[in-house]
Length: 208
Image 1: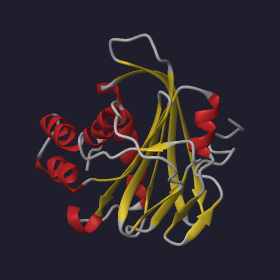
Image 2 (image 1 turned 90 degrees about the vertical axis):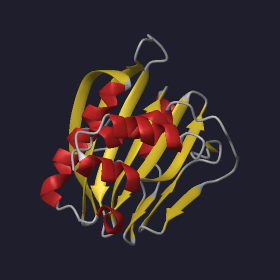
Image 3 (image 1 turned 30 degrees about the vertical axis):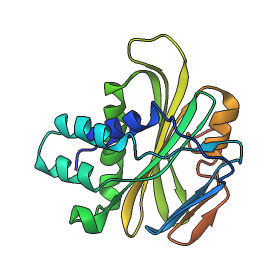
């Protein structure tokens, strides 16, 4: 599956983030993962944005395979802190009808990052790769601004991996260093493996 429409869909969800509830810290999915955020981040109900985001992503899909993937995508988490946002999306393999292999992860991630260019002007992208337990992680960090605007200036970061039941991507639009730190240092579990941070300090070959 080419992931560009999937990532554009992810970015479309991240942009508004209007409805809010408070105090949620650990977000768990029955697809085999969890992710933690500080309590001052606001968890957002993505349902109001889902129909329009899926429709727009489907219109940009290259074929029926991508359309099927978009239809299967689940939003595991959307949250915001000020003008910063985090969205976590998963593609369940049982819905999609096929699994992905480790060899497909870089292409999946690169397609996801490419799709963000439909929503953001992206500059100075940097790629990284690391492992959390037995799970390979693909990551890209770049500077970004919403198309047609010069601010706010974000650090846009997306990390993807493959679990037993799904492909999962975490994305942030971080307006400052503290929000980027919160995204990267959220504790995760992946198919039962617990890691203290989603993104370790050596993810890009050096400390971020």
